[in-house]
Amino acid sequence: MTTISVVIPLHEGERFIAEAIASARDQDHPPREVIVVDDGSTDAGPSIVEAIGGVVLLRQDPRGPGAARNRGIEAATGELIAFLDQDDLLRPAALRRHRETLDAHPEAMLSVCRQRFAVLDGEVVPEWQRLDLLDRETIAWTPSCLCIRRETFRRIGLFDESLHATSDLLWCREYRGHGLPFVELEETLVDRRVHARCQSADGATIRREMLEVFRRAAASRRREAP
Image (cartoon, rainbow, N blue to C red; front, side, top):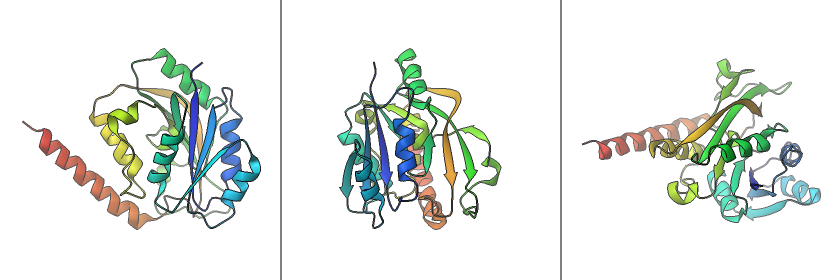
């Protein structure tokens, strides 16, 4: 049976990390391993992970979620790699459906599922959150919704560690720019928990890095133009 590693970046995530790990482990098709990469947390998050047991915990100085995902990829032993942000939850069928889909489509290098955003009770909606996406189920090229064959990273490369908030966006654009096949699942397999302290909540950083991603995309198109 195809094996899956789940990689979870952790940074100041003591509030949510135990539930995120539980959602990754309590699957119809359990992962081969859950790897949590602590990106310089100063709260109790790493201690919570250690207390859970049976989880690989790696530590590094704060370098951003892209660097944490890269560290997890390098440590992973599964044939497939699924990502999960510390704020998110995988639904119980998530890993099974990704595995079944990629087994049925050996030409595809990744599968992508739907997600559902929901604001936690008592939380203020952060400025980056698109209000039209709340409580809707949509296809999302975001890490928690992706399951990727390990060899894909040898072809596309790892996440760009110079970008803090948008390294995943750039990687996905590069994947699609290579024209590699993928499969979209119609099912919603991820719940995104929206709160004021989400890792993505720094609107200024997102805007600055989005411009950089678009600049690189435009430069790539110019290079490829006849």
